[in-house]
Amino acid sequence: MKRGERVTGKLTALMLAVILCFGLCLTGCGGGTSAKTKDDDPLAGNYIPVVGEMMGMALTGDDLKGFGFELQSGGKAVMTVNGETHDVKWTSDDTTITITVDGEEITGERGEDCFAVKDMLGLGMDFTFAKEGTPAADPAQYLPESEKFMLQDWQSVSVTDILGDPADEIAPDALKMSFRGDHTMDAVIEGKEFKNLKWSNLKDYGSVDSEDIKLTWNVEDEGLKADYVKDGEYYTFFCPKDPSENKVTAEIKKESESETESVTEEASEAKTGETKESGDAKSETTVKKVSSEAKAVLGEHGKAAASIYTDYWDRDWFGWYVIESCHGDYEDLEDSIHDVCGSIFVESDNAGRIVLWDDQGSAKSLICEVEVSFGPGTTSAGCMKSEKGYFLLDGENVQHADWIVDPGASDVSDYDHMIEVNCRYEDEHGSFRYYIYLRPWGMDWEDVRTSNVDFLPVSYDYWYTDVKDGPMPESIGKETDIG
Image 1 (spheres, one colour):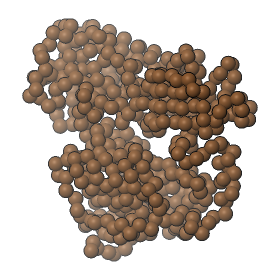
Image 2: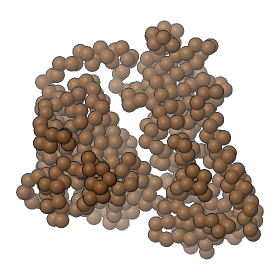
Image 3: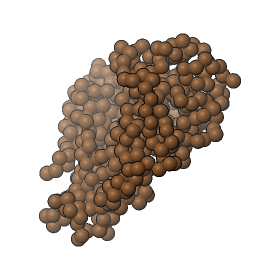
Image 4: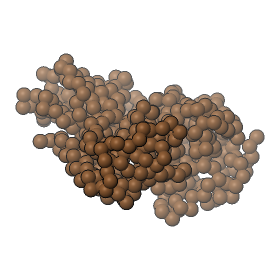
């Protein structure tokens, strides 16, 4: 049996069996005889587990079926495990929901129509529960970044045999896959359709749990390498992250990169890179910096005061970005680091925009302007998602969901009010990955210094600490005021 196949089902069955045994020991538990839910408590409703995380795996959909809580008015609740119902109690405050099961407390951090429980009943599994019928019940938004990467339509552009040679007997575009957040997917291989297959990922390895199709894959920055077994023969398909960019085979891609080794005049405009090691050291790169005439309008926050996302997002921000994993014409950008200022504007209930400028520009010379949307996330802060815009380069190079910024589900979640943008960019000249780290303007970073001094912005000590208590200036490291 392939790695990952049936594992999620076995883990879930074991977990639910333990919870069920625990529930059956409850004193005074019944079979769903509790009163009807009333409408006078906004938290009341049926909460289902939309995602569970255990041993590096995310479980959704049918893997969590038959488990949940019905929160009722007056502190009453019903817990359901494998179809068995038990009366329990619940309380809440501004940040948490606590469910009491025979003296044991299950405490979850509240979000919009959801709550997240860490280490459920000491079983080693984290759960997120969401109210049925609300946007929060979409499991896709809670998946790890490695699995969010999967949620799109994939089209193969090349296929090789077990020796790595082109496989003439199968067309390069013979594989299509569509992944959904509930861990179901559809696939088409050589014209044959497979519907509602179960899929799972264990870190960078994934597979389909089906007797009808033998399909596994490895997740890479560039896309997926999918292994397919046909009549006892092994084939490997390559599916690029963005199939619209006419990448036909790995060999053609290499030839294209070789042909563009010499930098064209348009792509060779210098951009200064600053690294932690060199401080103000300068290096030429091949990025063509954005030539937008857009300007940031500082201080215009609070336009959507009624939005639930205003308090966390609608403000000025300060931080830094780094460029890594550079290939092709962008290799000189490797480890380039710049401090950055900017603003996030919440302009309606669930939409807005973000603007940024770095230490080489100003609020009158932006490096980033992206339209964004806001929705439920793993915490009450919600989640910010990109819609369209640009970062660093000319053209609309940031698309829908390229950025999924959830403060409760990132590498910097342990830091208060810090967000991370993690995105890979690729064009005909090469590729790179960038990370943007931001905190509200005026907030100190001393907790970051204590934990990891390398995460401090370069200008933090010599500039930011002197100006952070005033309004955000139009440029970094200069004595300028808003004007």
